Each structure stands twice: as structure tokens, then as C-alpha cells.
Amino acid sequence: MAEIEREAMEYDVVVVGAGPAGLSAAIRLKQLDADLEVVVLEKGSEVGAHILSGAVLDPCGLEALIPDWKEKGAPLNVPVHEDNFYMLGEAGEIRIPNFPMPPLMNNHGNYIVSMGNVCRWMAEQAEEMGIEIFPGMACSELVYGDNGEVKGVIAGEFGKNADGTPGPAYEPGMELHGKYVFISEGVRGSLAKEVINKYDLAAGKEVQKYGVGMKEIWEIDPAKHKEGTVTHTMGWPLGGNAGGGSFIYHLDNNQVYVGFVVHLNYKNPHLFPYMEFQRFKHHPMVADLLKGGKRVAYGARAITEGGYQSMPKLVAPGVALLGCSAGMVNVPRIKGNHNAMLSGKAAAEAAYDAIKAERSGDELTAYETEVRGGAIGKDLKKVRNVKPMWSKWGMIPSLILGGLDMWTNTLGFSFFGTLGHGKNDAESTQEASKHKPIDYPKPDGTLSFDRLTNVSFAMTNHEESQPCHLRLGDADTPVNVNLPKYAEPAQRYCPAGVYEIVEKDGKPEFVVNFQNCVHCKTCDIKDPSQNITWTTPQGGDGPNYPNM
Image 1: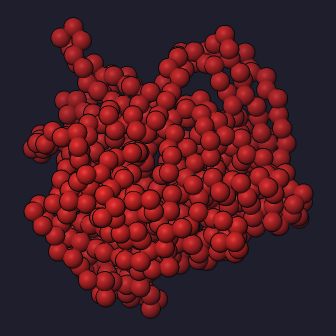
Image 2: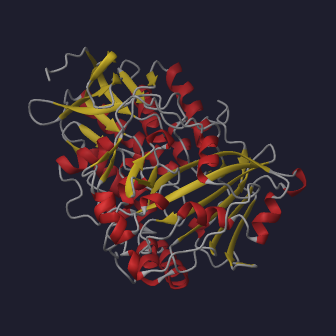
Image 3: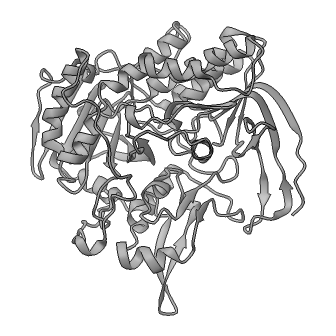
């Protein structure tokens, strides 16, 4: 196939992804020099369409970036008033008191927000500063310079046939070049994976770890609504089958965010994270809250959980990894948006200094130094052992020892040093023969729902004639390896029902319903054969989240 000719546009900085990290970087660049040419490319149909987060926001990142955010009308309208933590059993719950918890676990001073709406507001601030933001522009490839540096991206390629060849309405997209490229595409993004692999940025680091987070928005009975209440739970229904827990956040307008996180290092391939979430809502405490209400939205995404010791090197020639592309979530706090914003600010400052010194295409070492030694590094270092403790010793020991470790880390030391994570999440999956299948109750259609019904509330859409963006390394592996060995867990770990085993002519066949995909990346992470690679579909496709 002949090389495709594309137009090229030149910028000072190209930002991939209009999430909190990317938008913060763009805004900070313009604050430093209004004449800098900055472009932000977003694969969602609009800014916020692909943003899904808890979210209780620590405003420190926003304070550092836009100190007068209140006057400018940022949508942080629900301060946290009450902070609850429960251990659940099947029929009851025990509240864990707040006083023994380390101060960093306190949510007072934080806000219950829709991060989608926060990003929409940030995009408005950015556009007022003259920043170009192009939604519906998926970045499908990196462009490399003569010296092996990242010099840009290809964005806006449309109209390929299912086999990857140009269709009748093919648009080749454009090359957007920058003195520096910022990758802020969220968890397990395809460009970040390429950069990490090409430049060996994970060398000497612990493996990255992940969870899958699922979330519904409910409108509930006003008599049960307590605006500003934050509740987290652990225990039932997961028990010893997997790490994880839930969140219930009461925002305004009689709405609550109901979410559930399952750590993806679980061993039993019969585990069905989505059904664990649905079962959780039948706990008496939760069922009573939701009774008489209605679910109005659903979504899912992976969460980086490896923390401080799993962050790869953040820079390579011409490129920097921001926010969740590098893995900056504080796991026990269930917060990463503040660090994403701080990372965007730090990357912008490093790039500004470089451009001012007439440099380009080199490594922004000042950004790496600031992240590891500044507020982000300090935030993550204090909690670095909580996740590996849970993985090694289980929930109760990790609660006690993790709490102790967080307390001592506030004083600047740890009895445990820095613990490792061991296997990655795919390798953690054991053979199906070692585990019993799990019998899940059928969804009742009132509190709990089947996957395909719920996915319709994510408003996801993919143009079906394009190439499948979920690439199989070997088309035979799902049936020949994963099915006999692991009972093909893709049928269960995907929270959108993308993967099925169906019988055709008396033989099992692996079906990929890519139109259902909500871009959570769980398959890319958890497939035990590491046979599935998530790539970007054409721009604008995917979920269209409202207030997630």
C-alpha cells in the first residue's frame, strides 16, 4: 500500500486527551506565554464524553492552576459534609470509626463532582485563552523525527473499511507536530503503551496494577438523599475472591453516584466483576437507599493502582506522560484527578522553560524531577504499600498494617520500605480447574440490570463498518487456549458484554461485539494470554457520558 500523504500542522505543544491532565497542561502553557501555539486533541465526541471518575475531588490541583476557580464558576458545588466507611457482611454492616484513620483519608475540604463537567468547564477556560481543542479527533499513531524523538501524532483518520483499507469516504487525517507531545489519554492508552515500550520506560519499575471501576448514577427518593455524604465499603460481596470495594456519593439534585471497584489481580477466572457490582446493590443498606429510585447512567473504566513504585519513567525524547497515562492514582484515597492536574501544570512549566531556551524534541527531565520530588511524589509515596499489602495478605491485615504504614509515612518513614507487586494482573489469573464457578443471582431489572441494558445507558456508539479496534494477536487463542484453560474470562471481565462464546455448527466461536465497547481497557489488561490489544476507534466513537 502506497504511503499516505497527509497535511501537517505545526504547534509548540500537542496535547493528546482533554482530561484533567491535558487541559491543565494546555491552560498552564497559555498562562506562561499567551503566544504559544497549543492544540488539544480529544477522541470523544465532545470534551467530557469519555470522562468517568468517582469522583471526590481534592481541589489542590485546581487551586494551583486556577486560584480563582470559585469566582470563575467551576462546577465544584457539593462540599463533603459527612465521611462514612463500612465493612459489609451479607446481611449487615459495621461502621469503622474515622478517628484511627490517617489524616490523608479525611474527605472534608473535598468536593463531590462530575469530572466530565469539570473538564467541560476547564475546556471553556482553555478556549477563552486561545487554545485550540478538537473533539472527535482520535490520535491513532505517533510520528517520529529523524533522531528517534516523538515529533507529533496522526489524528482524524476516518472511513477505513473493516479490513483496514481506505473506504470510499476515506479521510487520511492530519499530522500535528509539536516541539513536545504530551500524552494524557488516560489509563492504558494505546499511544502511552507504545511510548513506554519503545523507550523502555518501565525498566526497573514494578509492574503496573489495575482495577475495573463501574459506576451508575441514580436519582433517589429526596427523603433518603443527604447531599455531601461520602460512603465507602469493603467486604461483601467480594469477600476473599478479590480486592475492591464500593463508593456511594450524594451529589446535588437528589442524585447519587453508586460505584464498585474490583482489583484485576483476582485469581478465579469465573469471577464476574460486573455481576459483583449488581449483587452489591442488593445489600440491605444499599437496597434501602436505592428503593424507589431509578438508574439514569452507567459506565466503566480501568483504574491504575500500582502507585509510586509502578510509575514508569515519565519522559522520552519529545514526549511526556501525564496523569493516568503514567498512573498517579492514590489508591486508598481513591483519588487521582488532583495529581493529574498537578502533572499537567508541571509538564507545561518544563516545556515552557525548554521552548524559551530554544530546545525541542529532548527529554523534559525537569518534569520528571518535579513529579517524583514534588507534591505528586509525596502524595503517592505515603501510600505506596497499601495495594501490595492487600494483594499479599488480604483485606483485614492490609487495613491494619496499611493504616499503620500510612501513619508512619506521615512522619517520614516506613517499617516496610517499599513493597513490590509481583505478577501483573493477567499473570495473576489461574486456571479454571483450580476454582469453582460462582453462581450469580439473575438481575431483577429494578436494582440490578443485565449488562446490555446497562450499556445502553452509557450511550456508546461505534460506526460498524470500521476496523475492529479490539485487536486479537491470534484469532484462535480465545477458543483453543483461553476457553479450555481459563473458561474464557473475557465473557465475564468485560463490563460491557463485548466478548461472547457462541456455538456455530456445533463448535465454539469467539465473537467480538466492538460496538458495545466503553473504552475501559480491562481486556487489554486482564486477558490471561495477553492476546487483546485495545486501540482507538475512529474519532467521536465510544461512550457519551453525561455527568460522569
